[in-house]
Amino acid sequence: MPEELLVQHCAPTMAGIKTGAMFNYHYDDEQSLHKSVCAFNKIMTPKGMCMIILRRRNNTALVYLYRPNMLKSDLNDSLGKSILDERGYPTNNINRCLWKLRDRLSQSSEFPHEIGLFLGYPPEDVKGFIDNKAESAKCVGFWKVYGDEKAAKEKFRQYRQCIGSYCKHYSKYHSLDRLLVAT
Image (cartoon, rainbow, N blue to C red; front, side):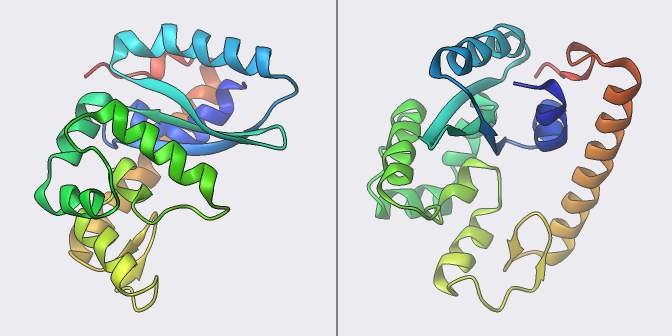
């Protein structure tokens, strides 16, 4: 798995300012995919991150890089917890929540709307997206905003700045390890 792909899609998570990120990765064989994920986890785990495969289809893997401590905190939010409870997630256990998300992803060609909670989106925006069927958002950036527009726009600015900085740094030094922030 190319490091550039991680930098482009996961910079805010790598920097410790976002809970998680997902991206699709086309792979040639299962064994090389597994080796790649294991190799990245050896580098990322000491920095407080974990990489897993959420779904495989037609030699394309949906890769999820996340910070377990941040995810645990996010999933303890009362609104987020109620959204997940309504959908049968075992909210008292992050790993079981991830297994449930995998199941939900495998059962549908579309993303389950609660997926935003696993990416660090504000629960009120995830609820607004679900309740409004993805219509009538106040603004759109990295997600559709239904709650605090000012706070979301500031997050969008931070994420864009982080991605730009990480991409520039990586293109200059070609060092992923120098970009990983421990939390």
